[in-house]
Image (tube, rainbow, N blue to C red; front, side, top):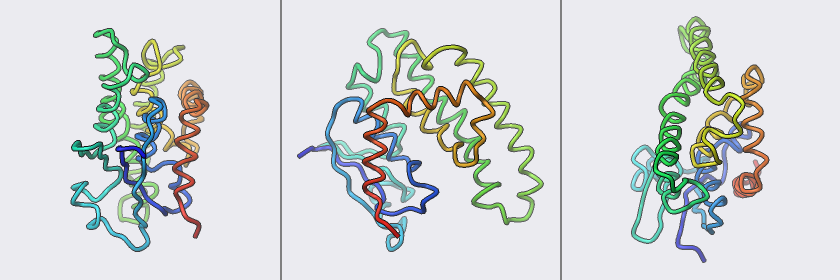
Length: 214
């Protein structure tokens, strides 16, 4: 039995399955070959207040490994990557670049996707959402153009697969939900390369297996 425990959900709406952020941690652990256990919350009967003791915002995942308790998927993944040559190179320059791209995924790409989801999905019925949506779409497209240019013809964000790709690919996968990624062929191919990795497939299967039916 593993000492590592990750919190996740036992139920989310079908459109969110395969996108919940514990997938990032599961994927990192699978790349490491590290066993873990999950502790599940049923969102149909459990609210954020049930999770706030271990995650201040009532979200998942939270992470525990012995005396180490953490929250926020990016922080957890970087913590794990520090322990694994499979996720961070040993060369200082390459390591620093991978760390930079990890933060870029969370701070320079994901906020644009989150804003799009707010105006086009979660708050689409709110006053002003429809008027604001084109501006959000344009800003996201500009950022994705920049990312595609930086990726170029490379297979991964750095010279090898790293934790940066785990985070960036799981961030970009949110765009499959509304087919916006297909407009950026290099990024779509990049995401598919990540999804083809056996460790990703195991992580995704594990998350989906934890979801109960309606």
